[in-house]
Length: 229
Image (cartoon, rainbow, N blue to C red):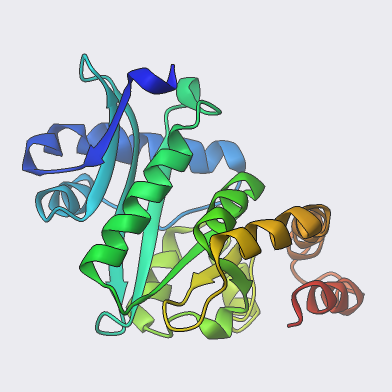
């Protein structure tokens, strides 16, 4: 199936996919019980027209997946956002193709920018590690208010704010072109700690799922231990 999927930089001729993409983003977020910054079809269409997005489709035009670029802090930070793959094509390898293509596009357009992402999925963490991303604390991400305002449409926004934007359900990962390990090193590190990361995500679900639960400070210390927070 993978070889029949075309992954490429989007353009103005792809704007007719925008409504389908935003509908799938919203549906997927609801199914996961987590959230992503909600974007309008117009916003997605604009990213396509600017050449700041990657789209995947079959030869007959059937849409398969999508991701786009956002810039923050005057171009100092870049986010590869909104990664989405149609359910029928998940586990086909297309998500990895999309991530690598959008990463390379980001490096080409913004060679000095730090590239970061927020994810609740272990599979995405693995793909990111293969590109040279490292898990980081939220303090190492952009502090641009416009970025954090985009989280308001996420179902976990209250959790984010209750933690003073220092933690949430998502795991933060960062690629710093000026100071980074090789993809081989970050991949090896991920493989060694994958069980730890999986446990971390489980703990986050338990802790943050109970907003003001008594005794939350103890699980939080485990988070600090695993990620050196």
